[in-house]
Length: 502
Image (cartoon, rainbow, N blue to C red; front, side, top):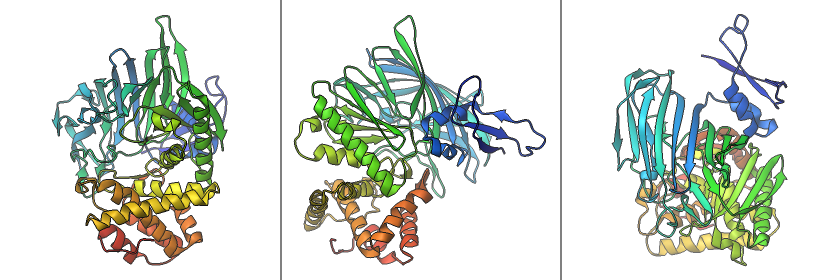
């Protein structure tokens, strides 16, 4: 067991850093102080006043080296994962998600070798190769730390957003490479490893916080965008670039390579916001930046400050959906930039709110999708209220009411706690987004404005960097109002009682 202490010092190895993290053994009086270079590098991804967040937990660590070949498009890489068994049982198999092997991704991810603590290990796969289990040569006991190293190759589709998940696709100058690497599955107390088949309804990724240190090699004429912050860049004689990114504690690592897009940037509360957009419409690109900076500013005020140094918005060919959130990066469907209504604004606000609802406060998107999508949808209303456009806030609320009312009229209502797998026949969006948003409006009406604001702030403060479930949200709301809300939660979340639409 080691203890981590943050020391505010400068001039480490000849470089000036805003902070340094040092590691002490259990007896610091007799042990020499050693510097942890992995954590030193991670400070670049955080706002200076949030660097201490790096030592809130003994986060799992991913170190990756990836080579991109846009001509494929394909990539190859090596990932080392240092993780701790935080359960109460021995591990004899370690499970990783291989998301690109899901049919909706339209690509492929293959693990070509795997080692545990330097020992080659066999593996087995489940559910169409969307899960790989590494069989350990010895049991990993509770509290024990282990290191897994895998090599992998992946390929992505091209110009395929009309038929597959557009966030894993090369199109319109954007090679979006979401979930391209083996991602450690969650071990859920009382359930075990999350080895469920992936439901192609809503968001795919279910993961826990980790720290990422990723070096990417790619042709120099492609701009690399990723979760976190770039800390080094080098161009070589062969025309390639070598860029290193660090993430801070994030739920996954997103990567994109852009070509031909323009950019604009601004700073909000110590965070650099960058918008990437098609150069033939710079006004729309500047508008997207203005919306993003406004959304970040008002959500900082309402939810608690976004702790990272960067946030990026990319105009992309998603086609089948309006937006998609990743840690530190949001993708926005390209056609929205040409519209003269508020759909672009609403979509950017919704996706940026996910940096709190999914990013900071995690939940099981394959089991309780309403926890993040319902609150992100209600954040659209909060956004318009805070920027002084109450008529649009009312329009958003009325739209959710209409969608949910129509669902009930056709007998399709369901408890909010229904997993996405149980929301067939077009019920996912009406239940998760519309009914989810209306639940938070009902909660707000029930506990009052002051308590609701305290709930939002307290929820982020208590559940930040964690994974929560419905009862955790209930406890946060009850603490904020100092009242009992079991009936509200039962009627909306646990059952499909015919509630009054607020």
